[in-house]
Length: 510
Image (spheres, rainbow, N blue to C red):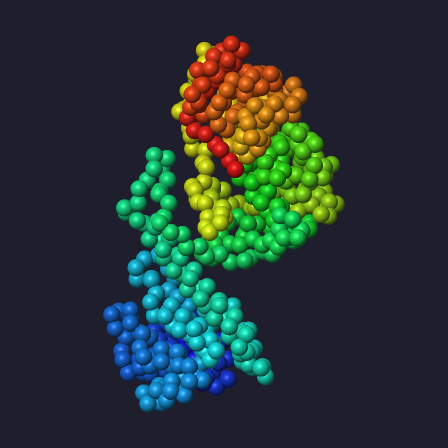
């Protein structure tokens, strides 16, 4: 039996090779792999010794040779194939162990592996007779299988082959992404976003089986980009039931919103079905949470809580009084964990010290493909806003306008958000018309928006939307502008003494 070993990642290599040698495998290797094996006292032959051809082109050509690939690709059940090996004095290769140049860690032309993927694909194609191992995590299981009475079963070799093709697919996807990211001909929009690539090549690994999907009869899982990671991968879940699809989806939405509110002071949000039912600032994180929960106590039942500060005992005491599905925060004090441990089903997700950033791309499945767009950022600077009414917003109103605008950008359209003193007191979300969104927000505010701010994610097509904000008592409004009836809406604001600013950018969200 012959094993060909040529790896970039040498973790676990020597013990694995020693186990193969003990099982009677002849070891063939090249370059650094050969040096590592012989330095450990193992007998190994070089690829050059087998092929009779020295490495060339600074190592670009080592294993690309008929002796290597004939030994891998020969169909063992085809007599003519086996006779050709005999005629050319080629020994079959039964096991290929390889992983590829570290392109993701150090992208560049010389780290684009050629011989490695070729060997991987050849062995995976011929998996009926050849085992392919691309992951050091598989070394021990493969040795255990080889030592067993059943050996490497056809099903096991097939699973290794499937993993091998996934390995090369992810590798190629990373190379394509690098070409896209470094394309000197790519155009950049006025907002600084690069043009979308001509094609997308995605590689993701299933890393977390969820309790179920959006509904209990659906299967759900979280996948991670093969060569990437996010805050979920380093987060600690301290307690509670297994996460479901909606738990993860809403927690992600809550974490994105609370981080969009700014880091200057404590902030908290309560999320329900990917829309906030509460959002607030506070002098302390406990106060911020209490104000966020108080924004809509009815809708907050069974919600997701996110904070931009660690949860302390004072906040934990408040949370313990309400039914909450998940609390996500940078951290939890020991006393807070003890208090919340009484809520056995409550999930506590600790993100840790991980820098937050908007997602580069948003993707949604459609028939036959996907919709792709850049993430909707809040980079529209307040200095670019312009007042269009006779009255300028006061300093206090401007603070609430900014807060309301940030919340509205993360709410499903059509939306109207009413804010007073850094607390969202009325959110009308996901309505088919802006007037209804305003009326819902006003009803939820129940008089608490008097003297506060109103944000609309898109322009008011008619003055009735503005009138709904005025009926709630809002004295300042922020909206993108751009309607053919802007003059009518501005006149309505002036009639009611409302200060209104245009941002020049809308925030539709679906």
